Image (cartoon, rainbow, N blue to C red; front, side, top):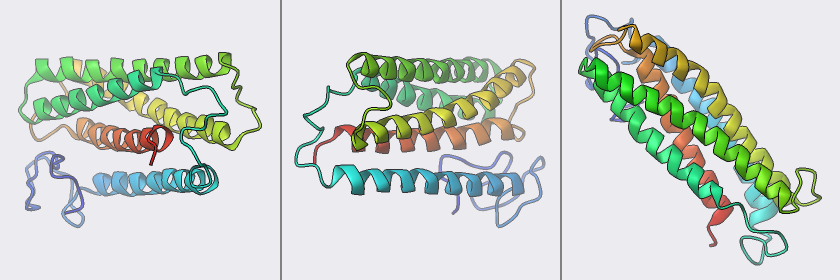
Length: 211
């Protein structure tokens, strides 16, 4: 199957059968879902390219990791990671609630996800500020520093981009627009949000974990 097992097309089934409110299917998926998957693949290629360049140019040549010639990375990055993990759980709760037409739970969960997304961005900003104040400005002549700021900023930009539809979906949830069989907006947000969570875990591991 082309989609994760926990992301079933709204109104549809894992075997590809169509529900009454489905869009016309393409290869067992609604066309918009296929478009989202193509978008996620193309975005994933961007992150893979950036991570590969960082690993080849910085990670592999390093004799010790993290580099000892620089201040330690801000510990607030751990908080960012925790926030994103919790937001993944609330996002999945929102999707599950939408599938079951549980409006109140959907509103609570999607609102929490939106708030956590904003908190993640705030925490990332705090991490950058702390690193700059530790004597590691953005323009420091070091590939590790350059890679750290570029990769984390690239991810933050995508989180910011995801915050816009999250706010929109949250507003629509309060208007009672979602129920079982008609919650495509929640589904697409969940696809994108889980994707960003996986990307961040990989990025975090590359930055922090010594091999």
